[in-house]
Image (cartoon, rainbow, N blue to C red):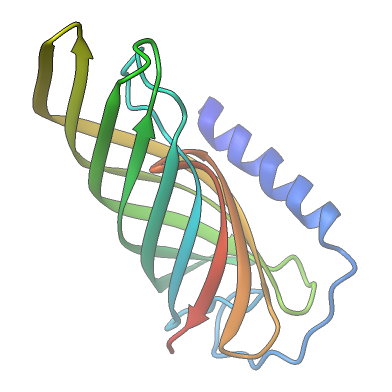
Length: 189
């Protein structure tokens, strides 16, 4: 319940920050904003990667691709389901020569709403999947490494601004594959 409240508050703040944008977006049906029932959107971003419970990890580089399908009307917004794939990569940390990466494959669900502001899409959601981790570090002349598969769960909020009916810019924050990212979004349908 606390996560849902956090998502609601974050979406409201994103709306207040983006209230000066304008639009020439066509409506596909159901929902207030560019993401409609029947929409298919793909966002691609880069930013600071998540650490996935490893205390030796420096926040490193992260990248993510997410594909979502607009399925259900929910109040003024639309619920989407889809998937995401990406990675979080780090050099350095507790050990100066520490290297790690985690590749994540996850399902994701989000609630999208434009709040009546043309071209604006704000959203909040959750993800769950698997992370494939690899760690490696050196102490003296000894190399240590490990591989494991970990369950991953995330929560995120984001906003997109569409500069054309099919293309826009996107920002997302939370604890997901990336902690914060910026990128582009494509409306495929």
